[in-house]
Every structure is written in structure tokens, then in C-alpha cells.
Length: 495
Image (tube, rainbow, N blue to C red):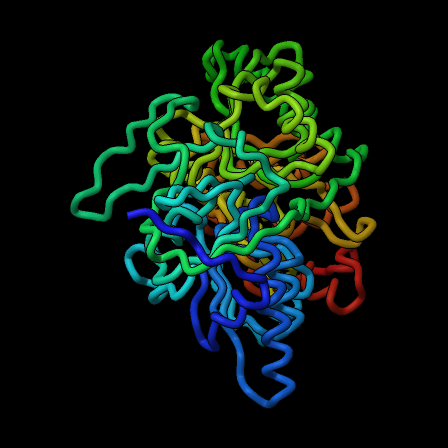
């Protein structure tokens, strides 16, 4: 039986959402995130609060979203809990103030947690779409994320049909959901470009209670140009991979690349694409950024699989103006597939992610500033790092004008242990941990990766303790952090 869906305003849609309900929103980065309905929900929350009535909702997304979702809801104090990842300034402040409950999660786990019922029942799925058929086939826009799972598990569905995105996106998505145990089977994907699912998400049309029309671009922030430090990091990564090729540890045809998000990631991808010894390659990643599109245009990347098309408005318009040129070169999948450990291990992916800090033994903190304040979350870095062919972490060696060393005696928070991190790269050089014990790792990091102004201090720390497989001093392990909190400069640390 076919349906005609009620056409609603954003305010009418928001009026249907009640206090304490749980919502699964589309969005993996601001790409494909719902926009007008969450903004209207935030406005409703302000009215309810002004009247002395409680109004907060549980917010689950694929990853981070845009200011019209996370930002508006956070400023309206309308978020009861949030998972699995975020990057909004106002939401971050609410989380670190203890006003919003936030639990950090590996992105590959989020969809199955929802299906298993670990996060409670979903009252709503609110998703952005380029088109909806009368029989319940939904064409998503610039991301997939966890939207298919939200749509299948939610009791009711609201859809933002965003006319900014063309219906000609049909063919750029590959929707596949694994079954739950004990009925789960191997994911039938053996090459980055394999298609294993459907082009649209199919739902029971009776669950769709309304459609809100909009015409809003994705709220993608631009990245700053490469600095001298990020350029050198990129060159060091590219040089390391070229050396692995020469040594025969990477096959001559190369392997798929996964890259994190941000300025360092853009610089690294640019350097890999420019290196004369690195052949044309594929990417199997989460977020497709401007730099990836540049590499496709230059024919340095032959194919890219991701979960979101997180590009600037000019780049997206370029893509939309000649979609046929990217057909067969670019594919969007659910995050459960783009980040799936089974696939990462099978394809032999080279993972390249960014660290907030690392310690001299190879442990990495990618989430908490000074071990206390949540920055964004672990995202998909753990999904790839633990299962990669080669796992690489990059970071500038210092921050805050040199007053913070990104390399410390002991990480103030650990997201990726020395058992998973294989290579660390800064603007100063490369530390290859493979086959090295903790003492050898420490020597490599201090000599190759640490800023010269911190090397003597870290050598002094390393020599404090003679005994143990991993020589740590409980008394001095956090001296860098303590001194920064006291004086604003880690160089003042004493042991």
C-alpha cells in the first residue's frame, strides 16, 4: 500500500517531539545532518524552559553534526545525553561542565548498540534526504552514518527533504546492515569499490509521520592552509610509506588509505598524492574531504569509499555540476561498514590519524585535553588503528606556541595503547615501533619526534627509573601536565 506523507513545517514537526524522548539524527560530520527540525526543537525547548517545564531529549547521531543540530540544542540546554562523537564548541562546554551526559564510543559500534537495544528504544529518527518515494524508499544526501539503523529501529520517522541536494545522487550510496548474532554472516566486501547493498534505505512508509522541506547547504567549516609543521608532517608520512614500498613491506600496487579529519590529515594526503614513488591508490575511509576530491581530480586516487562527503560548498557544487564524472569513483556507506574491523583487516588498510598527545612509549590520547576536558571523541580512529595493516599517528610536536609538548612522559588519558600504535610522526621525524620494546620506543620517540626544546627533559625523565619493562616514575609521570597548570609552560617541569 502506497502512502502520501503529511507535509509539515519545522515547528509542527518539533511539536510532535516530547520531553525525555530519544532521537536518532542523521549526520556524519555536518554532512547530511538534519538542520531545520533540530533548530525548531531547540526553539521549543526554550519556550518550555521559560514556562518552567522540563524539556530535554537524548541525542544519538552518526558522528559530529553542525551548528543547527548540536549547537542549537546545546545552547537551548535541550540535550539529556549525547553519543557517540561531537565537535561543537557550545556542546563541548556543556559536556565539560557536567551539564550534558556524553559517552564516547567507537563509531563502528554505534549502529549495532542501537539495534541490540543497549541505548534504549528510539522514539524518533529525524533524517535528511534528497528524495522519498511513496513506498518508503529514502535517498540520503551527503552522508550515511547510522541513518539506516535509526530508520529501521525508530518508532516514528520525520524526514527533512533538502532540495539543495539533487535526486541525481541516486547511485552514490551503498546501504548494507549486518544481521544480529547468531545470524550474522561475513560482510561480502573484498575490494574497496565493491557494492554489497541498496542505493536507498527502505522503511515501512507507515512510520513516516511527516516531511519538512528545506533548502540548506551543509554547514562545513573550511580548513586552514597547511603550515610549515603540517607540511613537514605530511612529507615525513609520505617518505615513510615510500620507504616501506622500496623495502617490499607494502605491495607495489599499494594499499587503501584511511585518513582522519582536519588540517594535518589534509596535509598528509596532499603529500602522499604528490610523492613520485607512491602509485595511484584507493581510499577506504570515513570522511571524504576536499583534499580527497583534489586527488580524484588529479587521478591520484582511483576510488574512495567513505561514510560522508564532508567538503566545502564550492567543492560540493563542483561535484554536483558533473556528478557523472564521480560516478564509480566515490561511494558512501553506513559507518558500521566504512569502519568495520573485519573489512579494515581484510583490505589491509593503512590508517593515518591525529593524536592530541602521545607518550614516549607509544600510547596515544586522542580525546582529552590535559586528561580532563573532552575535545571531540575517539571517533573511528580506534576502529582503524587496532586493525590496520600499518597504524600511523601524527601530531605537531608542540602546541600553544611551544608551551605544550605533545609528547609527554605518560599520556594524561589513553585511547590507543602501545599494542595498537605502530608509527608516530611529527614534523621532526618518524618513530617506527614495530618490533621494539618500550625502552627502544622511548629512545626513538625522544630522538626523532620530540621538539628539541623538550628532548633533554624527556631524556632526564627516561633515566629516572632503571628498573622495569616500562620504566615509569609515578612521582614524575605527570610533571609536564602539572607544571603547565601551574605556570602555563611545560618547559618549567622538573624531576
